[in-house]
Image (tube, rainbow, N blue to C red; front, side):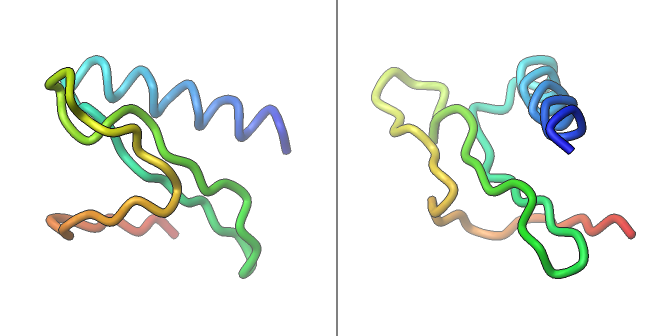
Length: 67
């Protein structure tokens, strides 16, 4: 399972860099079990941005669920 989580982690970092996304909070859930709950990056591209954590609140713009 750790290889899968490492791949997800790498994908998030690459996607954020390629798409100029300052940060995100990501959760991966399988069979009602939290496999990953982690914040990446910061709240803004500006220097004063705060680090994003797994409990950082965001305004919801778009949700994508994969099944």
